[in-house]
Image 1: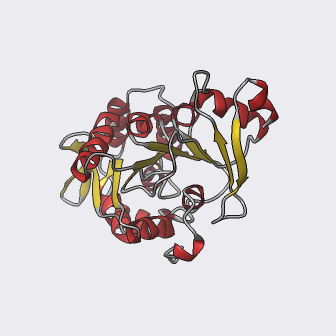
Image 2: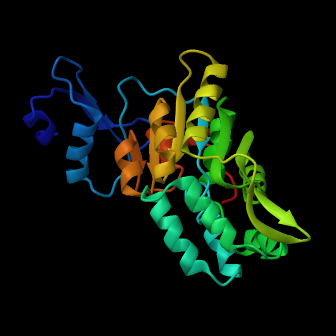
Length: 280
């Protein structure tokens, strides 16, 4: 607080949330010299480099809309990387994925390039990959189930594939799933993406459309980890970066670095007695 007050900003109050003994709530007074989110973020990041943080210009409200990325956010892997392991080319694919998630490559071009490298891989590898390599992030089921119980509409939107996103969405309890299609013929991957590409623009559009459907004033929450999530994070009322790449982290209203996905419930002040605990 000393660093914040040294900048001339007035701290109205600070204390632990009533619903959690691990969440510090800090209130700054709005005024002509009110800090920008990025300014507060930089100060708190210096003091607490490994923390969970959410900055808001208004009182926290339980979101009525939750839109989330899938790979490395709701699940603990990048599906295309794990699928590439079955083709024996994981290091080659991982290198492309990493650069794409950091925003160093065009998302669509990088996606098509990686899928082309999987041409001829047996379709059975998808099911084996799902069973052996794809797991929910800790806290994912509890987060989704709790938000839904509190009246929140939940959407999983991913630049990955329906072959993975549909079962993951069902497993975690999402109301709606949007993803890309993998080309298949005679029991093998064709190396092509079928239909339109779910990219950063589509993610943002989905969030805005769903928010509009819920009506003016509906609080929206978005989570993601990569550069292609940035427009969605920025369009949401509150955007949270989960163990994210630097560009996504910098663009978000907050981040999760220490806890699992249930840290989001703590940050919103949702009492643990209200959590719908899933089998993680």
